[in-house]
Length: 328
Image (cartoon, rainbow, N blue to C red; front, side, top):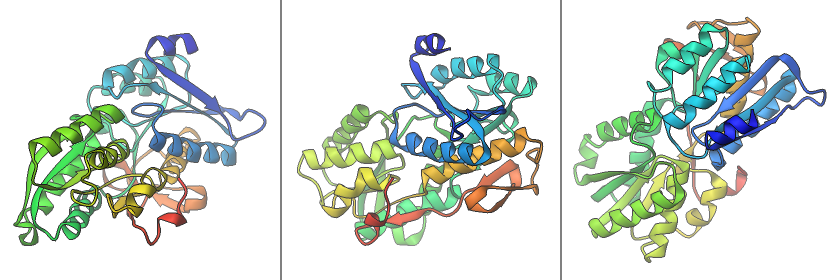
């Protein structure tokens, strides 16, 4: 398996929270958009905790680049291995669908998390927060930071990423409200969740739009890279930055004023919930239909909503007053 995955340009890690190796009937594999991403590493830690509590097995595999084409071979390999469930964050909602449907036809349960796939290619989508809340809150934060006036830009992940595109749709809608009439979205750039590309794209925005007042980056990799790029040209505190990030990556930039506020949910809880949802499907406690409920450990009872979506909860806003209370 390792050789095959290496040939796909990715890597794998495995483990189980149970000292006895876990139950072979509960063998859940996580496939993030890409490995070596702190956000997905944190989600994996949450999934490992769930595996330990449920005495199941856990492993994470994935490509080193953010692309749907690079994810497909991993799905095929996991299907050949007959894992009991695949938990996937999609780089493209439709490109992964054929491979995931083949997995489902062989009895493998499919859960999407973080970024959804086509609804007929998974049983459940574990959504980190209400997509509308995520999109709107980022505009609300930036509006407050720039006094609701000036040119703004968005630095996103891949142009095909389901979650980012949904959030951007709500950002655009929020900007149509009267209080944002003096804020103008001049550009949406794409850093592909790659640190260096996100850094360079930010520099490109700053050069192309010298009067830029603010940037929203709805991606943890992009937000940290954008903060570094802004400070590299001496514009920290002059071009306001917000978006979605992790406290450990953004603590410095919150405290020095480059990114005074940003939002996120707890990615460890997202991975934890996704594992519990996958386990409930594998064990036949739910089928994925709206209205069904399942035990999600420390998160309590969760109910499946419309379109087979399970919601983790509302996003948290991090700033200098609370960021030291979090460590992920």
